[in-house]
Structure formats: structure tokens, C-alpha cells
Image 1 (cartoon, rainbow, N blue to C red):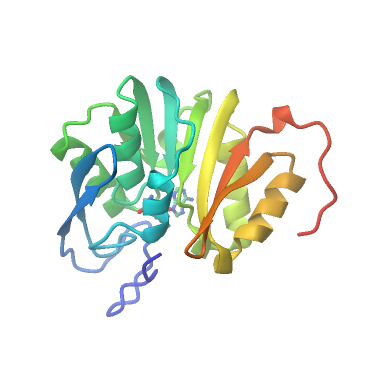
Image 2 (image 1 turned 120 degrees about the vertical axis):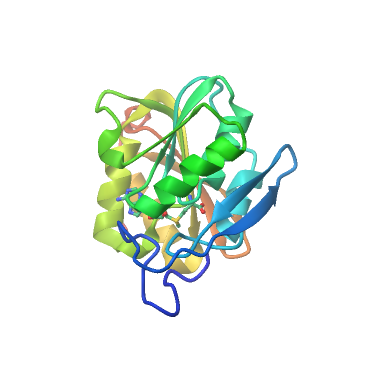
Amino acid sequence: MSDDRDASQGAHYFDDDPDVASDPVVVDVTLPDTAFSMETDRGVFSRGELDAGTSLLLRTPLPLASEGDLLDLGCGAGAIALTMARRSPGATIWAVDVNERALDLCARNADRNGLDNVRVVHPDEVAGDVRFSTIWSNPPIRIGKPKLRQLLFSWLDRLTADGTAALVVQKHLGADSLHRWLDFEGFWTERVTSKSGYRILAVSPRSVRDHPTTPEV
Ligand SMILES: C[S@@+](CC[C@H](N)C(=O)[O-])C[C@H]1O[C@@H](n2cnc3c(N)ncnc32)[C@H](O)[C@@H]1O
């Protein structure tokens, strides 16, 4: 993960409306199965590079529905949403973020790559009855544990019965405690990858679990 503040002006990447001056940088992303370029900017997570955790998520073999509604939770400039859109051209990819500059960037990045199956919106603009067959996220750990858990809880509960989520979290930022909490809350959670200080957690909906484990959070 890159630094979460713009060094000179103290903006957080998860500010709703970062007031740091825009200074875009185009990043070329090359994955084993696809490549695209995306504009990044100050005031938005990971300016000037593909985040190492996001890169690991996108290089890990994970279930990805080919149709239906898919979610990139906290899309930033859109690396995850764009990859989902390329890999699942028949699906609708919802890319949500609270950061207005991130939403602008992500929408422009979908356009510049000719991806018309990406819907870039504020979280409040996703109708309450939309259910997701896949959720991928490099979640905003820095918003703090209570807010993060509330955020994950609300979106993970919108997985379809056979849906799956994948989260990339740094070990030193609480990946294992998050894993235990998800398990306790009844989400079937499995660590599928542990590499370079990152964990990838695969999460299935609560409906597939009968018996929550003892809390160790
Ligand atoms: C770690 S960054 C990941 C960005 C991008 N997905 C990537 O991989 O480069 C987390 C993102 O979550 C966004 N975020 C923070 N709070 C949020 C919320 N309540 N709902 C949706 N997104 C949020 C931040 O603005 C930020 O863009």
C-alpha cells in the first residue's frame, strides 16, 4: 500500500473531496491476461503505481462470475474494476468509492479503455436490491476498525448465495484479526494467499455457515 496521505498537504486518499491540487500520472498495468493504462492522481490511493496488494489480488486465481452484478468496493482509480470488466465482459461491474476524485478517475479510466460495462457511482447510488456474485476489494483499512467492519458487513451481506468475495489486506494492518472477525460473524473465510506481507481472504456469504466459531478478536 502506498502512503495514505498526500505528503505536502495532509489529504487522505479516502477524503470525500480531496482539496490537493490535481497532478495526474498515467500508469500502465500489465497482468498475465490483460493490460490497460489508467490515470492516477493526487488525493487518490496509490498515485503513480499499481498498489502491491492490488497487484497481488489481480494475479491470484480467484472465482469471478462471468455475468450478473460484480463489485469493486473502494475502487480508487479503478484497477480492480477495470480488470473485472475485461475478464467478465458480460457482467456489470459496480465501482464504488466515497472519494469524488477517485470516481472521476475511475469513470475516465473505464472510458479510455473502452469498457462500457463499468458503473462508477457513490455507494449510496447502488440500489438496495442489487446483489453481487463477486466482490473484490483492497479495502480502506485506514478508516479504522469499527468503520471498516461496518462497511464490509454491509456489502458482504449483499453477496448472492453462491457468491464470493476476495479481500487483500496487509498482515501488519490487521489481516488476521479481520479474518477472525469475519469468521465470527458467520462468513466462511479462507486465507488463499499469503505473500510479501499481504493476505488474500476469500469470503463466502453467511448463509453457507451454520455455526459461528468462538470469537478470538
Ligand atoms: C486501499 S484503497 C483501494 C483503491 C483501489 N481499489 C486500488 O486497489 O488501488 C481503498 C479505497 O476505498 C475508498 N473508501 C473509503 N471509504 C469508503 C466507503 N465508505 N465506501 C466506499 N469506498 C470507500 C477510498 O477512498 C479508497 O479509494
